[in-house]
Image (cartoon, rainbow, N blue to C red):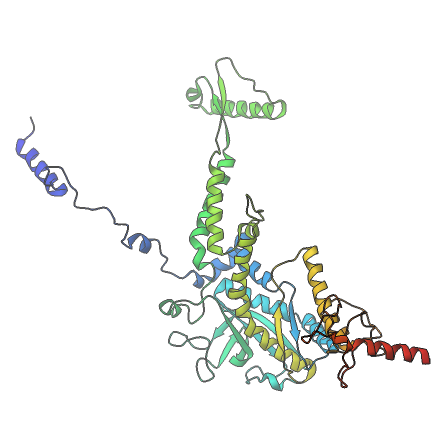
Length: 488
């Protein structure tokens, strides 16, 4: 018979632990977590920047194609088609010489590598290598024509600073920060390095990153972990999708001796060999055999959800990330436009200062001076054959309309067509040997596309008016050309 006092003590202790409500029911003191409370958000946040783990970032980039796609694809797409340089002070031949020099020294590839390492590690730098003293300040406008000039991409871990950046902000002004970088055994003045930061971090985290930016992997680590975890699960399920089950009489008894264990192993080896060769099983009448297979129903839907979450986190559409074509009524253009907007804002805008400095330095090395110039990227949207031909036809009509209205000469027209890649050969008009023949009906008052003549504001035919003395219309040029050939 148990002691009643002890039972009463236990009951009282349970009441004190659980508590009793007004209706006499037990109500626990530990209330469920409210959805408006930040505890789940706090517990799921990372408190150690992954950008500081150089080894994990390096081997992850080497191992996972998904990481390489996240880092490389936006940069490669941003520079697809290269860049176009425009300058009124440079002839087409000069621009071609500049392009050839940039191709010979891999300038664009160095810029792309700098942008990729900045996305992976949170920061990088483009080193300006010349034949001057690397410890001395470099002035781009003093680079000599024909001198050595090469650009080297280096990530933030290759550029060791001579002072901690905890109390300073990067990049530095001329009178702030360290005076040099340590690139291996070479000490570089800070003017020899063009810094390129990754995604900007909050001020509290920026101090831990020593003024550099964040890796692109910081914002999508949870989604990448979920995807990799699910891939590992599928690998294990496929490996165990089919299991053979043998029921052997007195199996446990035979395992008690070494001879019995060896006989069972030999028996299984023979059975599996015959099954693989003859697709048959030979066994004793007292034994039994069956197969168990794992069902994969529903896994495809789960994988699709993981892919969608991953693509949303990476800001890369599914058809770009996994090579998956658009399904349903969607053509995928909306996703592609969002991706193009991300490239314009996150990649191209950040690369513009870097490209401008590279062009200024290369122009000094090729021409000995820096002309006024602009540059632009090629459009991200790819046109099909019909759309591309329509664009070329429109460009050609606009150029011919300028010539028909005496705004440009034949040689200038040829330069316009060559820049638009509408012609690629040397012509007599381009060399200035003769003027091109205008289209019939084209001249003052002629329509730019069709060459038809419209009526002026006063209701009279503009072609009947006398053209200005400083400019001849198209028909007058044609008359001069005919007279010149007749005289010959």
